[in-house]
Length: 80
Image (spheres, rainbow, N blue to C red):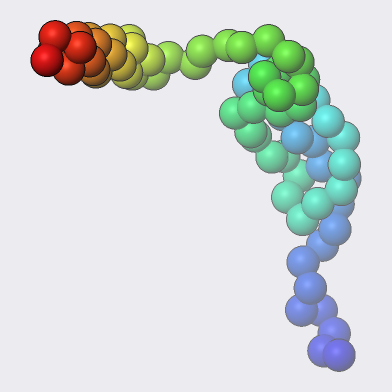
């Protein structure tokens, strides 16, 4: 093996947007993440929407239109 080609393995902190800090070891001293096990819905069991630029609202509006269209088609088929 060649000497001095590997990065240094140092103590590091993983910082989440929720404020949780996890101590570990890595090649980077600080790692910033958007979601961790303390705030992820899978681990907490609570659903939480992170709405960026109204995307959740837009999706819900599209879903409502789709369901209305499907209901209209279903009612037409029942009339025939």
